[in-house]
Image (cartoon, rainbow, N blue to C red; front, top):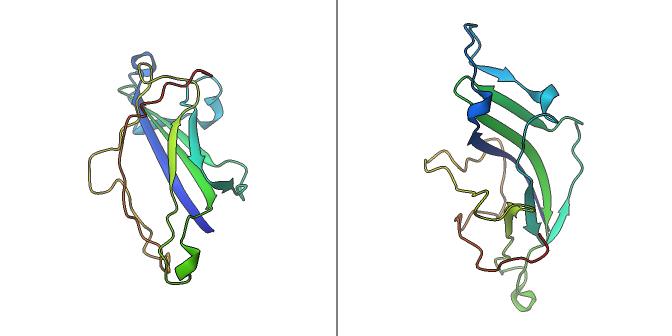
Length: 148
């Protein structure tokens, strides 16, 4: 098992939330209005479990003047990894997870990795032991779920 703690930032545009504010602040902190704003229902598909957050408020919600919304969530996953026991401890276990919307089809919501070098970043203070990122990709799931 591996524990992974990360910040997942999601960004979208809602023209209804544009505003003209002459203040010096770059964005509005909307954390206390999160129940009044549409938020994506991002679901993690994985073999493992979630670890409860230490702090009760584990997200940030910012609205920018142009209607762009940044939604930042802290997640702590405990991943069960698939390895080859016949060569343990010399195997390279594969720990994978995916994310999707639990209630919206692709026609209503689409997840895309931001295309820049800063998309996936590791804190320099972290040790990874023998863990490293092999692949990060956006794919379309070909299976249409009937339970939505």
